[in-house]
Every structure is written in C-alpha cells, then in structure tokens.
Amino acid sequence: MSARTIRARVHAGRFEPLEAMSVPEGTEVFVLIDEPEIGTAEAVLAAVRRGPRLQPGDIEELRKSIASGRVPGRIEGVFDRPKE
Image 1 (cartoon, rainbow, N blue to C red):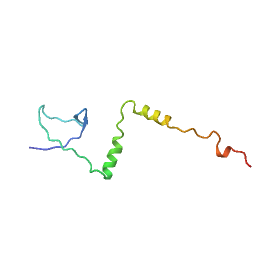
Image 2 (cartoon, rainbow, N blue to C red; image 1 turned 180 degrees about the horizontal axis):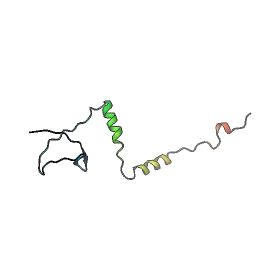
Image 3 (cartoon, one colour; image 1 turned 90 degrees about the vertical axis):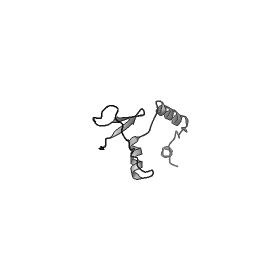
C-alpha cells in the first residue's frame, strides 16, 4: 500500500480536494485531520485566517443593536465654550 498527501477542504459535509488527483471511483481513503493544538500561536492564526462565520442578516442585526444602544453625545463641545 502506498500513501500520499493531498490538501482538501470540507464543504457541506464533504471533502473537496484543493488540487487535481486521480483516484479510482469507490476507493476508500484514510483521512487524518491536522488541527493545531488549542491555545498555540498556530491555532490563533488559523482562527484569524478562517474569519467569522456569519449568517445572512448578522451584520444588519449588529448595526441595529449598535444604533439602539447609542447615547446622544454633547451638542456643545468642551472647546466650543466661551472663555471666562
């Protein structure tokens, strides 16, 4: 038995190869998931690269939450007051 490594991404619960490969239909494969150890710099970088997992409408909901929580600011600035 020979072994080789390919890169793949999970999409909709299935592995999608990131590179061309020739494997006969029906061939069983062994999949090793390479995940960085929790708390390491590698894990933090992987999370940053992956980015947030947003659903449609999340941004608008955030905008509404921010807008509803705003406290009116001063109309008159500290430096706009006449000198005494």
